[in-house]
Image (cartoon, rainbow, N blue to C red; front, side):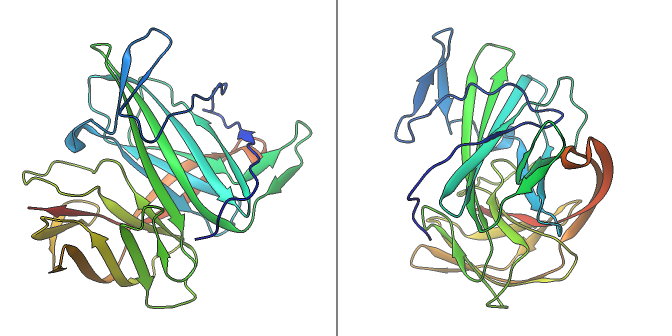
Length: 279
């Protein structure tokens, strides 16, 4: 992975994007205070109650599609701080969908910025990113979930090196390896690692090898867009190895293009997974 040498933060605004005032979170801390001095729990929410959050690439390379599903009924608001590394510059913005929210929710997240006159510039050399989801529950408790995603360009690993994806095509692009925070539907077995997905610009089979450092995993499941199917895994010295040769599932959604002055566009989304490891 390339190292960050200079940081420029540019806040992007979309139809659902709110005013920003970002709040820093210490990655080594388990809690943080909000303005009412309530405690926010970091990555402590049980996985069955977490939203399913993915970023899906677009063939234009001008935007990502944020796809959000499974928000439990006792959540009354959600905001997502999205950042990505473009070369040596860290960029991003905040997405705050309006409640009540229709699910699944999808919207364009520009990989760049547009001036008030409508002139847009788009970022290149995309490397990796993070998503920080702030969830507020009806009982007053707040939760923050933090996850990573990586733009695929040949073999890639997550920032913590716990997940490595080696595509069959060593020059593979047009895919994103992502921790989806939560997962669609319900799973009765106990999960032992965060759900992992690979999103893509098209319907071509996703082929390669996925390696996950996950102790205690004995079974694998993969979501096919409707239900979970068994997934063959190999567990060697605490590392799970999965051979991928799967067709991604498909979803058609409408997104708003801020770079096209708010024009609505029909977009086909392609996702493999999430992949779930259980005991």
